[in-house]
Image (cartoon, rainbow over all chains, first blue to last red; front, side):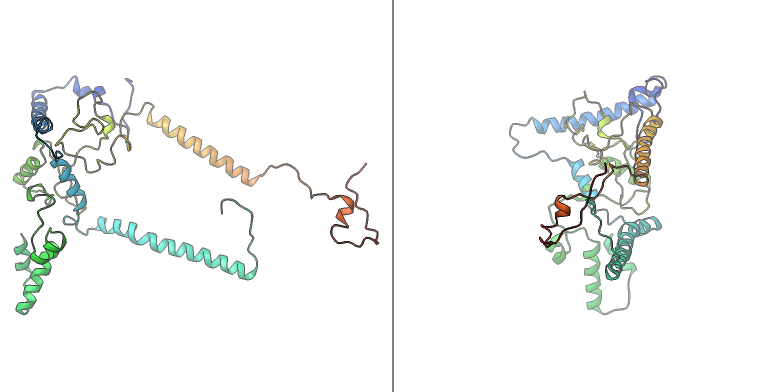
Length: 127
Length: 202
C-alpha cells in the first residue's frame, strides 16, 4: 500500500497521509481540540435528550432541518448567470427540441417507407 | 429587507396600485407557505425557524462568523460555496467525502449513517451514504482499473461489430416435403400425375 496513488474519485485514506505523522504543529493540535470540543458539546446535548426517561417525542436534529431547508429553498439564492442559464437550457430545452426532431424525422421516414411499400419488417426481438 | 425592495422600485401609480404591488412583492419574496402567507404576508409557525434558514452568501467576516456559529462549525473550517447564483447561499462547502470513508469503529450517534447528531451534512449527503457513491481508496491503481474496464468494453464492442459484419451460422436449406412436395395435401388433382421431385443424389 506504500505505492498507493491518489486519483479523482479515489481518495487517500487518512492513515496513509504523511501530514498526520510528520508535520503536526501546535496549531493543528489546537484546531483538532476545538473540533473535538464542538463534537463533545453536541454529543452531550444528544445523549442528554436520548437518555431522558421522560422524553416521549423524537429528537429533532437542527443540522438535518437546516439541510432539508437548504436543499428545498435554493430559489431565493438563485441568480440567472451565464452558467445557470446554460444549464437550464441544456437540461430543460435542448432535450425537448432534440428528441422532437429525432422522433419526427424517424417516424416520417418510416411512414414514407410504409407508403412506398419499401419497409422491411425483419423478425427482431429488440425492435 | 423587504421594505428596501419596495422603496427602490417606486413608480408613479395609484394608491391601490402601490398596495397591490407591495402585496405581490411580499408574496413573491416572502418565505411563507400556504394560504396563511398569502393572506397575511407572514410565515407559518411550522417549518424552519428564522435563525436556521439558509441565508445569502456571506461576504464580511462577521457574516462568516455568524454563519459558522449557525452551522456549528469552527470559523476557520467554515467555507461557503462561491456566490455564482446556483442557489447554495451560505450553506458550508464540506469536503466531498463519502460516508464510506468514515471510521467504522468510532461510536457514531447514527452508526448506519456514520454521523453524529448536530453535525453539518454535506449538500449531497444523500448521494454519499453507504448505499451509494463511494469515494474511498481504491485497492487497485486508477490506470489499471481504467485499462481493464475500457479494454474489456472495447474488446466486446469490437467483437460484436465483427460478428455483425461476418455472420457465421449453420448451413440451411429450404424444407423438403415428402409425397412429391405434398401434392395431394396442397389440393393437387389426384388423377393427374405430379412431377417427380428428387431431394437426394446418389
